[in-house]
View (cartoon, rainbow, N blue to C red):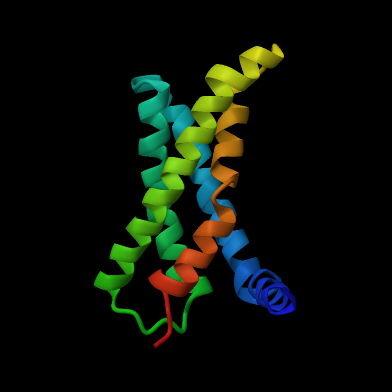
Length: 142
């Protein structure tokens, strides 16, 4: 168990994780705010997905430039793995957003900006799984 703690500590208490949080936070803000705009023209569920794709493009560019600069992965291969990791993350984001919006918040009587709050939680959920996926697959060093 001690080795696992050390691995987790070195992964999540590092400069690259901090940069990942900053760049990912910016991309998440793009994701979250663009969903509000997209929701003007499309249903909530579809707007979540399209907004996620918008944020994903921003996240890839920022991660490649600022977080994982030492990656030896080819662009083609890193884009492939970026999409795979984010397909997992979008499922997490979508599920959390939908469950909170349509089931949990109504059961709690929460109506104040329920979609916005639910989507914010949904965007935050995959932070850790995405970092590990991008570190070990998308932008790996060989």
